[in-house]
Length: 260
Image (tube, rainbow, N blue to C red; front, top):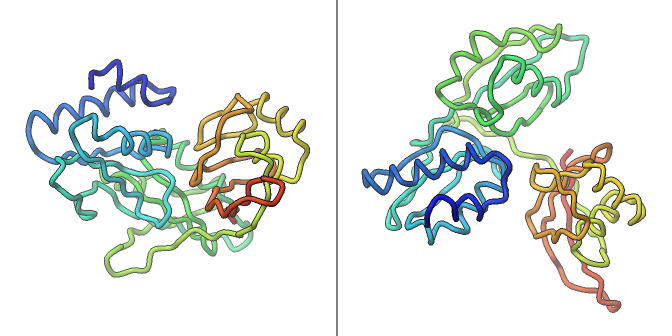
């Protein structure tokens, strides 16, 4: 597969990132050695890579530290190789809020990391537990983060590395719900998961308030697959977990998981 076809096959805005991935694929082909890429990618990227890997003459594996990670590192392997999680260039850190007076939210920790001038691709998902934020970060920036991130807003923080081999890694918490949708179109699914009208759903999509796998989805008739992640501003983040059949009126029955 040439680079032009590769770029066209993955519907992701940042073509520089995609171009760099393609160069890594060529590097593996040239050297015959496995390549572990030191960047985290959203589902639209790593899922697409897995789907087209046969045409790239390689095998793509992914790893995000957490079970059901959304943002993941990738490894590029020959077809007879398998990945080793110990070879991924990643550290898991715990950022502890040391203030007893202010409860911090996911957005506070995310903003503090971004304010350090760190690219979003350099760290993965954030899981918050009891005012501790667990974040996988690329090895090449982990020491920088530990030395320079001393406050979250005005609140002091402490950062420690977590040994994932000997420590239980936190997991996402979800609230599961069964819902019925008229179809798997984006406007229909958003209307059902948010409890709003189809017209309101379509308007939110038009205004760019809906993300599908972390990318703005501006077409209301976009098809929503199982395992897709929908973020609706003001309503939360949801994963389409399972399709469980149809009603007598031929509507779709699905299970969704809301991130909590």
